[in-house]
Image (tube, rainbow, N blue to C red):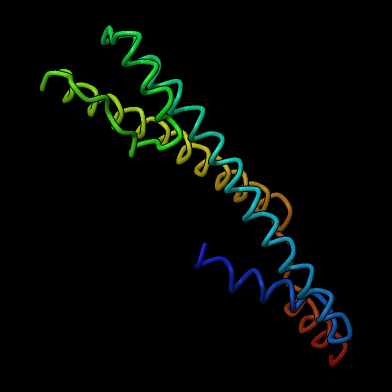
Length: 149
């Protein structure tokens, strides 16, 4: 994101005249903030959904007791920081730690897949919208050359 912010801001500010620079700056900042808030909310929901689904599936596969499953359901909001129930043997505790870690990685993969998809959509929309259009500066320079001849 750091790589794209400065060029995007420059493009937005160069697209308007100096009389509308304040409005363009305000719109640019508002859209940026709204997109950040929306992205965090959507990515959080995706992470929680994928973590919960993976955790439930892995607990079912490992044959976890209803008490352990209920305990971990109460801890699911903590994601990878979920506490484990006490009083379990070492093998079960290790298996539960692995289950929680795998569920977190599964959620993280879903979020990264969503990010990659959004990046591809962004590239496709830029290609489609910008395509072979000449930059305004290049077009203006070309027009001046034609008039000078």
